[in-house]
Length: 254
Image 1 (cartoon, rainbow, N blue to C red):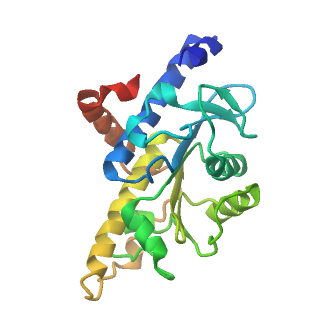
Image 2 (cartoon, rainbow, N blue to C red):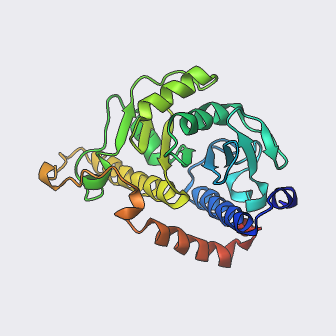
């Protein structure tokens, strides 16, 4: 982390980046507790504020989510070069995250994970979240379903296709793959991913009974495309998780 701090000349910018690193590290730790990641796979990124060429924070290849600290995150440019920190940028992460950041500047934070219930939903042919839970009234107009993504993400062309498919939505359920969630802040993207996964859990559990599902009236949809945190207590949720981590895993913030 020292190299990053020394490269920042403005104390306010230094403090902001450090706090963003802690938020990101907290998201990795909570995601590990929730079982969202595939061992050392999966990746979350955040565009850094400031002047100059665009830069983003991301987890380096080879770390479990549960061991990542704020200082472990590397800084990369949109060409995939590691600018600060020790570690390698995973190629799959580059092809997904850099292309989304490039095509959608409002996607400041990008979370790509394989949580149990959303991933299970992605394996079902033509399955979508049913308008059955109160969460769906806000979520369902924000989700896009990628029904073409059979190819592994091994090149920029597939990353560009993913970014186009996501468009102006904030959640993309990727067929046979997992989920990508974007937001203007760390807490927006994290909280929307968390609630989308819980909502998929409720639906998949209800579907397992074989009983017909109730459908909520369409008139109750929120039809909201703005920042998730303007309707949900996203910042308070991440703050609460950070208090838990401060007690139980304080090294996340190092």
